[in-house]
Image (cartoon, rainbow, N blue to C red; front, side, top):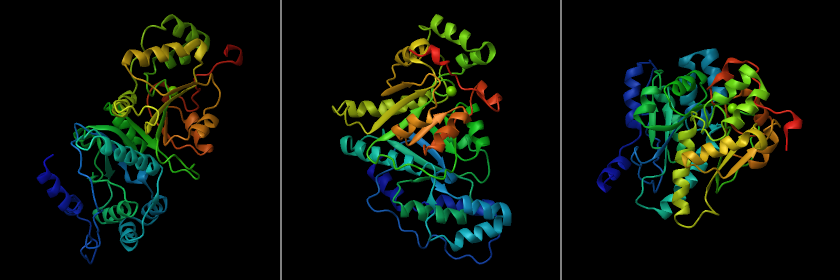
Length: 372
Ligand SMILES: [Mg+2]
């Protein structure tokens, strides 16, 4: 982007896109004052990267912020009362939501990348996706400025499906509190996960982004899990050993791991492997001995590294995640999501694969005798 263009973008208020939304929703709000009069643009704002270079993370407003109280007003008292409430509280920052620390960590990585590669657009670009009313957009912008988040792109979908926007923004990861939209994104081939408001969250690393992934039906396809469901664990172990050298097909989050790897290599190129501000973890219920090799060989065949691979052999994931303290942990099974959340881990559900058909889906687990 030329300096000129960057300057232009800096001067044009984000409010512009918000106000176009305002006319399209056509909600009557009574007396209107200039809703953008109190907006103060953040100082020293870096330029917005080009979408095809950047790793684009689309986050919904209910993931970035805790809007439980506000949503209750909307559901119980209706849209007009909700918008009025948001307007009355627009100078009061929203509380932090489940994706807040993740977004903050992405921005810290961006800060390091900008120091090392001042002219590169290969950084994270965060897009706020919201179907909120334009007047609520003011509170969102105020909250973003309050926390000094660097979110330039707003996408106000006005209740429409976000898929078209996600595709247009070349989205690498979409996080939303709305499981139906996440499902739709996954079906459209976009890496996506549902986030939940949790009661207690751990304090997380400020200088290192930590991302933990489940294996089957997250980084990898659910082909092996289908064997478990159809034929049981013994057949699964035999199958995985037989096909140890056949890479697994890719799962919905593979592309995001790849994107993280691309940024990690930029630090390695500057000899900063040991202090790399991105760290990735595979946290799988598989066991190393009987079904782990295929997973590691698959990653190798993709040319992807993972910093730590943890094979739990059916043991619960929560206690280990509590030690890792990831900014986000992706899993396809609610059983693991809940276990992680109970111990304070921010977990995101990837609605993909055969496990979704089972209400009480059984994770791939091994009997104790199978452990090394
Ligand atoms: Mg899984």
